Length: 259
View 1: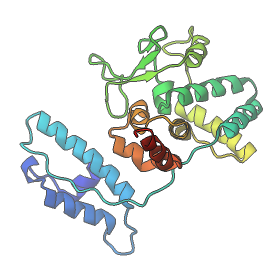
View 2: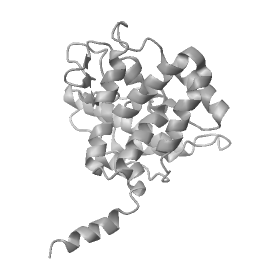
View 3: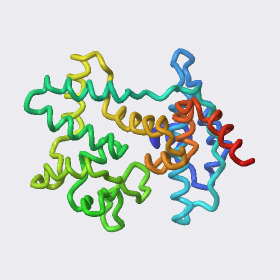
């Protein structure tokens, strides 16, 4: 993102990065030159803008910028969230048997990711210093260790249920953390199962599936947002609220109880 933005604006003083400059950058990303080159999607541009906003906020906090310029986000085409059903997940777990001796590890990682609604990297890189099985949490941020952090440095925790703790205890002798494999190792095996079964399931789909199941089960959208550690409940509403097909009827029925 920084390379793209610097390529457009050059190397201006911080005070010269105004709303107008950012607006021109946004337009340029949508319709790049030459015309034969396809512009980026609004969703892709918004991702850059969110990162730029976070950077400018940091600059303000550090005293390098007096005021963060207003950044107008683009209207995105709404896309349905991709997730699988409980029965499909059970079928996927069974299909992992094609992995032989590696099946149990793949299943265990997938379950922990699903139980915590974590990003896959947060589980695979978690070390025992972050994990407290008694308090049933995985700490994602440490003021004294910059290597421990989630995507947004929210300082939050992943919350473990008893089943997740039971899985992690199986790997208590591993160091530095329970899982000693990397993202590519896990993704390749998920892909192998997907090819065999015809059921699409990528690592990040586990997190989206967790959020979808919670919403469908009636969990309040604000609580789902906190559990997923979204930066705002608006992000959660954007993708997940349509899964609650009966929410308006349920609200209407609840109103009847007031009289």
